[in-house]
Structures are given as C-alpha cells and as structure tokens.
Image 1 (cartoon, rainbow, N blue to C red):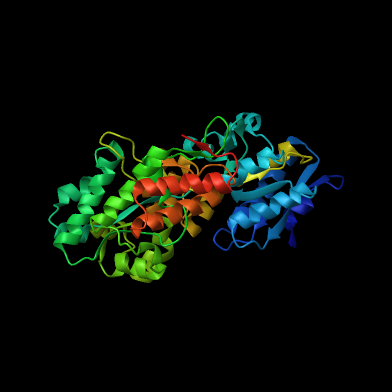
Image 2 (cartoon, rainbow, N blue to C red):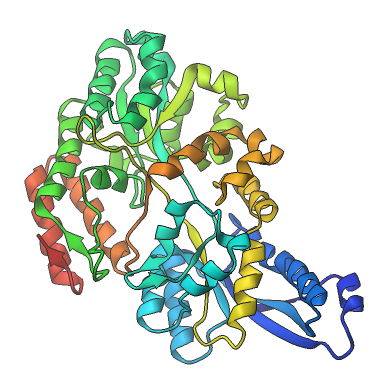
Length: 446
C-alpha cells in the first residue's frame, strides 16, 4: 500500500493554534486515473472544515491521510478493504462502488448516516433524492453519493431520416420516451426500418462485455434483482424471460447482431460513430467526452451534435409505462468505529460542495449530485452533462448486494446464449435461476 500524507496549505498551518488538537482521518481510495478528485476533493474539504472549526472556536484541526489501493477494479478493491476491516485496520472513510455498501453494513464496518444527514442539510439537503437510493441498505442510509452517470440509447438521426422518419418524429422521441409513449418494441421497429431501408448493417449495438448497461433492459421489464425487505438477491422467472425475449426478438428481426458479444469495443464504436452503420448504441454519457468527440470526430458543439445525433432514456416495456436509466454512483462512506464520526461527516459534506463536485464532473464526464451544479457555467458548458442530468429523475441502480457481480456474469452468459441462438428466452431465464441457486447464497426465486 502506498500512504500519502496530505498536509494542508502553509497558510492554514500557520493559522493553527499551537495547542491545536490534530485529528488525522484516513481515507481509503483506489488508485483510479478516471477519478483523481474523488480523494482530492476530500483533501480540499479539510481546508474548508478547518476554517469552519477555527471560526467556531474549536481547537481541533483535521488532516487527511490517503491510503491508496492498487486494485484494478472496484470489486477487487472492496474485497481487499473488507479483509482490512476484518483484521481491525480499516480506515476512517472510504470510496467505493455503491453496490458494495451493504456488504460493509452487514459486517458492522460502516456508520449509519441518517441522523447526520438530517443534521447537516446545508451539505446534503439538495443532493438529488434518487441518488440516495444508491447508499441505502434495508435499515437505513450508509453512504453519500459522490457522482453519477447516465446510460441511454444514443441514436443516429441521419439514418432515421434516410429510413423515412421525418424530423418531427425524430425530435419527439426523447419526450415520447419520458412520457411512456415510446416503447422497447418500437425501438426495435425503428431499428429494423433502418436496417431494411438503408445500407446500415446494424440496428442496435450494445457493449461486448459484462457490465451494467444492458441491465437497463432487465430493469425496464421489472427485474430489480433484490428484495427490498431483506436485501437478498431476487429472481423472477417471468420477468427474466420477458427481458431475454426483447433480445431474442431483436436478433430474430436482424436488429442486434448475433455476434454482438464477440465484437471489439473499438469496432462497435466505429460502426456507430464513424461509419454511420448502426441506428442505436446502448451505452453511457461519458462516452461522448472520452471517445466520441476526440476519437471519432463528432461535433462538440451542442447544436451541431443534436442536428444529426441524439439520445433517449430506456423506454418503457409497455405503452404508458415508466422509462428508466441506469446510474452507477461511486460513494463516500465512514467507518463505524471512527473516533470522530461528526468530523468525518462534516468533512465529506464539504467534499460534496457544488464547486468541488463540479470540478470532478467536468473533468471526468460524470454527472453532478446537486441541481445547483446546473447553474455553474462550467457544468452548463459541458452540455452533455447538463442535458443528461434530467435522466436522474428516472434512474435506477444496481442492487446493493455483494453477490450481484457474480449474478451479472450469469446474466451475461445467458444473454450470449440468446443472441447466438443457443437458448430461448425462457431457457435463458431458467439458466440464470439454476446457476444462481447452485453458486450463490440466499437467492429468492419467484
């Protein structure tokens, strides 16, 4: 482990009384080049907290010590951190993917936050209500959302026009989706028209590896994957079959390629962004900032982009139903046994400030956590973020269950089976249930 002791600015140190009580709060953070300000903002927050403590006449001053983990991903990082807590050497605070929070709660390692959040509305009161769901376990809230994402269907307006759809139809798609008028089956119909009436080869493309994005399809067909009363994994046979049935229909109609899961990432992006060879691309908003503009030459100007490109939320399964999106927040959490829980809460409250969170959002193409960030000129200038923030109104999350990563691997294998024709939709649902019951613990089946 690398340990980096982060000192406050010299001016702050000089202002600290000689008899000040130094409180060192250790923060566990994975080494993650995609989000360096997740820990960095906590360091900056210490300066603000110390100024606040001085104004209050307190003799306490906070120093943040970052303990960095070299884990390649959040799953590996969470398992490593659970082991560290298990031997009594856990940090005061940690950064983690939200779906792991209840694993720490079940073992008694994380502080329940409900009373603290109510005590400090100036820090936490305006965080988007939907995001708090990502930090909840059955008995309360245990984490503070640090950022958010939006996943959607991007679509190529040029191909839709070529297939015969007029501008009125195309420009109405986002609003129709949000109202529940546009459905999942209609997306397949539109994509099929593009394939049938243009030279485009693909109707819909999705990621070629295990991940969250395609789980939006399962959620729109009612698969929440977790029992809200117990937090245990929940599988519902009919709803699984309905979701797999959408993939089955899309492949049968020549919309999703049977080999989608064996395609290369760069090839998929090129087909959609550069070659005008796919009508829809199911992915996330960060792809615009990280790939589409610099790599594939899409126009960075908002007006120019929306002339030929667009996005919609995940449509409802049936007419009049609710649309959805999927976000995967990273969270801040506090250890149950920290000696200074109040200071830790206040510190993370300052780290959640509008300006600091916007620093992170605009440099990593993540969504902010507070509506006030929409008023920040930097956030407004990053128009993909500003425009996608509305999806937080309908967003959903991965289950806060540590076994979900393994379950998702089973789901992905079944999805491959459906797309390649080895499994029917019903057989895929049965496969997921059989494999989950055989390899996972405490799986509820309906």
